Length: 433
Image 1: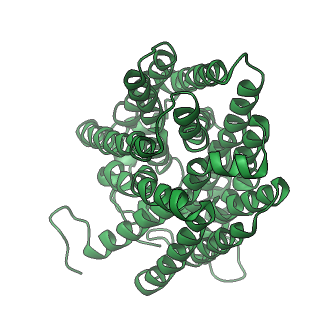
Image 2: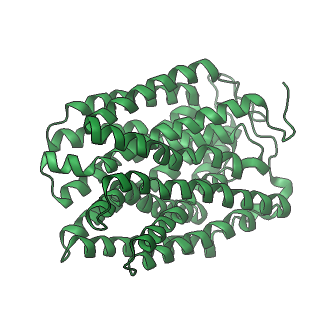
Image 3: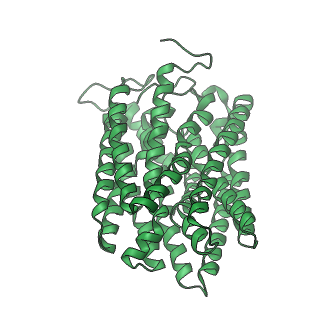
């Protein structure tokens, strides 16, 4: 197969592009609920706490489906699991047009969350098995930036549909795009043989190597390093889901931006996330390639960026200027999302390629718990504060504190010893989708 100068094949770039589009669609699906928050709240007569529940229930089955999806992908292949996943969430998007009550809305959000639960971890798993380790940071970023770009690209389009054709039209559009993506994926992605360098045991047998690998996986799952990285992901998703579910509402109802201005401004943090993830992952790859140290190349990038995000959230609540507030809160959201890139890159080396689906699934499962807590706590604080502005500011401060604490734990305490021995690194990852 013809190779590019980077050592990455053309086939790989096609898969990376499709996985990028997968995260674009997935996050556009998530973002609709925030863009349409004002008309939905008005039509269904919802309170701030009820809207907080709407944001949280999306992640009710998200964790479980992330674990199951990752394990299933290790057994039958990511291609099939991804197809089923996208089909489920596309159907749910179409069904949302019939929502007429709070309960019905909750049901659609729960099912949509179950369908999208494995999406990010499966995209990271598939991409990581195509990429050499020295390209993981930028390679996974190219998939990950589909998340913020999905929100940024879709924001003006979805806002236009919502303002001119009603909020249900946006759900119809994203459902249709999901089915088109399935066709492209089925045409382009091919399942490959079992993980290179790890031959499968004969049918009907259980090899001692398999048992040993499973034992190693369990020890990694309960290790300090994995738990702290997952907690950092928890903080990231707390911030991420506040940005999706509450930031447009804050800008419209507290900062009083016009709908025309809002349709532009809501895309700002997601563009910034894209640029920051590309920048920091490139820096991370450069350091990793130069030092062969995960601690220097990954951890010492992740920790400081999370701390910077926390500072920006705190400062964003103290300024009166709309421009400064939007800039600082956007930076808080931007820096807080770095774990979505650095986390999966760190996890690639923690277990064998055979267990990548499971470890990424568990990471996303624990990470997504922040998506359950963040929107609800924000709604509770808004509903129980003297006024909405005070409630929002308290919520942003809590988010900043969580980023600071869990980002600090990773920065100070995550130290996998085997990373200091470059000879143990596997530089020939399997090419399996």
